[in-house]
Image 1 (cartoon, rainbow, N blue to C red):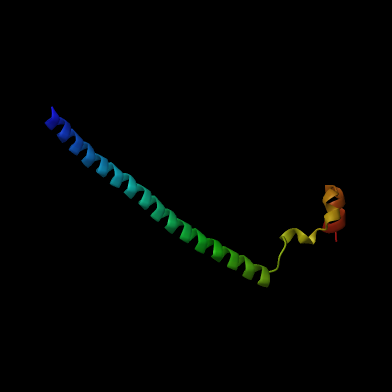
Image 2 (cartoon, rainbow, N blue to C red):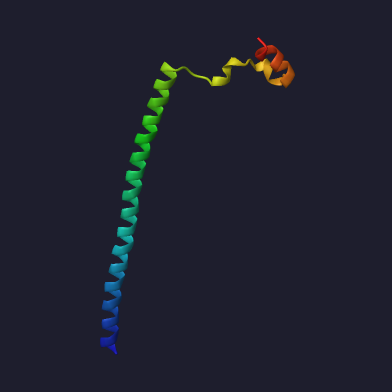
Length: 87
């Protein structure tokens, strides 16, 4: 009976070490992929910020709808047509 317990303990130890290395490898690979995805995201975000900075420098800020004044938003279609389109 002691021999069977010894064999089971050795098998349990072997399988326990295998499970430990499997979990350790899974966690480290997830961290490695997370690092590279984070690095790519940081480069993309930095490029986006640089692009937006250059765009506002050369093109200018604001929307294209800046031609219509704020007070004209409550005009009806007829008033808008008479004021802007019939010139």
